[in-house]
Length: 238
Image (cartoon, rainbow, N blue to C red; front, side, top):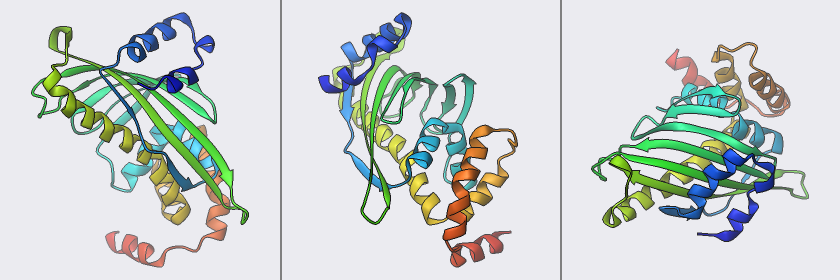
């Protein structure tokens, strides 16, 4: 496992209970993985909103018809949900800043190829950088390090033969987690009119995250022509 990702965790800013949870996982993970870095067009404001407000982001995906997952806020910076396939769990932001996000998660994985239910504990360390080209276009670059500790039924260690399967599952899940945010950033810039319509369907009028998204969309709506092919398709579906 990479020590530089561990060193990025702001240990001194975490309380003793949180430090202990994280140390248990990063000290002896079953699986460690670092995703390739990804660069895409987005303003910092849009990226951070979609990253730090995952319930809103998932609602937008569901409105577009591209998500089977469920997610709800169960406390400050804490969430519970299911991916619609093989996993469920609870997770929390233990540290958030524009450049660094640390997530702790506990869950269950019911992968049919593994033949058993795995109890998992994960620590995700997301690094983000922002830059702007000479033409004024803004970009985001992010990369995710993941430490996952997994045990089979009755807290037995994962069998050595299962580790390659589990490794591939972790790698795929981590990549999808990044795309969950980056693809929504890209689509928002590509077709803010459809995203605005999706936002209107979210029935949380007092949600501050929804209000922030509306504010971000306002200049995009004024400067981006509506995609006529998509508009015609939407009208046909109605």
